[in-house]
Image (spheres, rainbow, N blue to C red):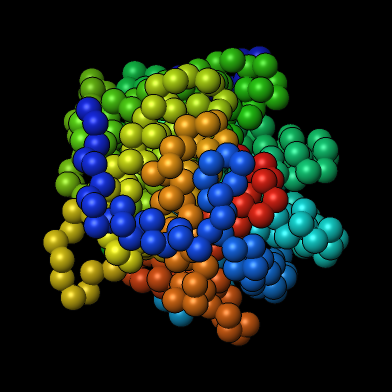
Length: 415
């Protein structure tokens, strides 16, 4: 592994079909135009969904604080039945619960939510100071929505310290010859356990990585260490080159030659909906930090391609390239991430009428009873997400709540 960070050195997409655009327009007909020229959904519909998120977070965050674990997803919505522990290397999801709790605290000012989140400070610290070998590139998901968020909200410098330590570990995964951040695996191992076997992972990056880059940008701004921003931008540039296809669909996994570190390609021909939305949101966030127009342009083009593949249901298929069959599944979590990405584009004045219509149509559908679970006995909020098979996902719940917070209050995100 050609790691080079050892410590702190401080083509146009397809035009949407007439039928799809008609459906997007119809699903936005109930809305009223805003000053920005877009459209806002009925407030009571958004408040109803946000209140559901707050109500379920009240129980979920206490359960997580009582027994820290990944609680990633569940077919039946019982996240806490999953046995994956907090310190296991595969855990990338615990912070979706803390992120939701901090959104709830910011909105309700109920100190209960903050206290439950703060109970988790010891394991979050231990994960990067004691169990640091068992971490991977999703340190960005974990620590942007925990340590960085807490530092931004409370000013507590202990959280800043932990966030900077997580950043150091993430930066250490950067391969300076291949210009990529290694996705999976311990840094002292070439292979990693995947499924029932082992796979070489020191030469692999995945598209999710774009959502981990804000941790690096934040640390660079916080400390003045421009080399950290440089790592994030070199990785983002690699993603532009390797993950964005000529038609603006996206690759999911990308491998590099382990001798020369030259790009090899994606072994699959999928067009994974959630991967596309990670890219839309991730590039938009990179633009927000760097003001590099190439990232904003990519995000817009990726958004248009994504919208072009939506059908009358609006919520995307899990894989747009998958041939139709009776068991084909949709991914509501990808829809929620897409809304967040479109909101970020709107923040930067890059969301045209097409993107704004898609944002509203998606949010409208995701806030319907078809996609929300109002049973208080179920931990999950959002139905029909994709986490290996159709079910409930902690990330789908988080991104839906973030989107609602932004739509209702115009609040800044934690990224």
